[in-house]
Amino acid sequence: MIWWSKKCTPPPGYLLRKAANLRQKKINEGMKSFNLTHVQLILLAYSYHHQQYCTGDLTQTTIAHEAQIGVMMTSKVLRTLEAKWLIKRQKSKTDTRSFSVHITSDWKKLFAQAMPVAIAINEEFYSPLKDLKQYNEILSKLITPY
Image (cartoon, rainbow, N blue to C red; front, side, top):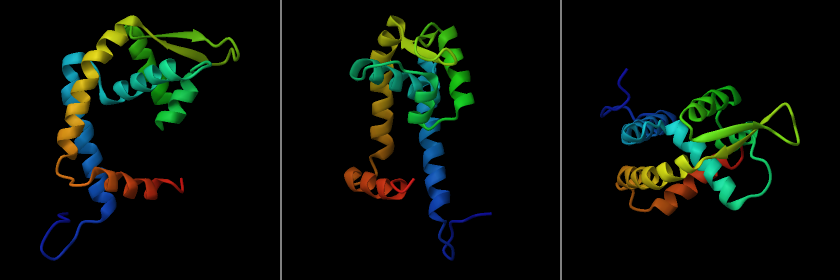
C-alpha cells in the first residue's frame, strides 16, 4: 500500500519508523569498516560513557534498560563484543546472577575512530531539519509519558 499520494498523508508512526530504520541502515553501513553494527555501537557507547562518568558496577541488565534494548538481545550482542575483545564480562561482585561489563583498551581505540563517523552520519541525516532543538523537544514530548 502506498501511503504517500496526493489524496493520502502517511500516518506519523509510519514516517517515524521509516526514518528510524533509514538512520539505522545508514549507521550500519558506516560502521561496516569498523566491523560493528548500530546496536553494538549503542551498547559500547553506553558502556564507555558509564565507565567514564559513573561509579559502581555496570551490569548487562543496566545496559539493556538504559539502552532500551531487550535483555536477551543485549546479552547476545555483548557476547559478540566479548568475542571481538571489545569488552570483558565478569561475574558481578554484588550479584552473582549477573555480569559486570568493562570496556577494553581495544574498544577505546575503536571508539575514537568510529564515533566521529557515526556523528557525521547523524549530522548528515538530520541536516534537512532546520531546527534540531525543536525536533528533539517534540520527540521528548512523545516519549516523556513512557
